[in-house]
Length: 140
Image (cartoon, rainbow, N blue to C red; front, side, top):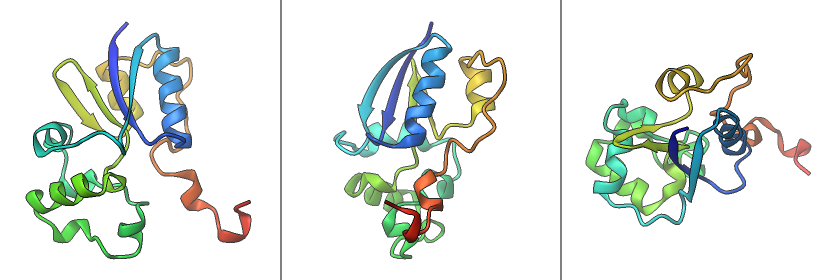
């Protein structure tokens, strides 16, 4: 069993599915609210530093969808500043196991890293918000 520190957006459907996979694999979860954590450059950057800057962002965040924030036009310092100011911009989940940090939920990478012990891999997209695929008329 591995202790997994997991930062989520409470109520996120996919974060719920991701946590379920980790628990079913026997991992212990410490779940934190990504939106209310008092982020600093020093606490946020370790999750992001080994990932291309454009992949740091939650592409369904309102400020990105509206075009107000364009990740490809930012440098690291400005990206971190914006994410600390508005954590909705941060791609989810953030995961920490001991001194290893990651962003997002690539099932193959996580399985190779800490193990997911799945009899059959989940084939649905567990990173994109399912609500972002709904049309206004289908939202109740």
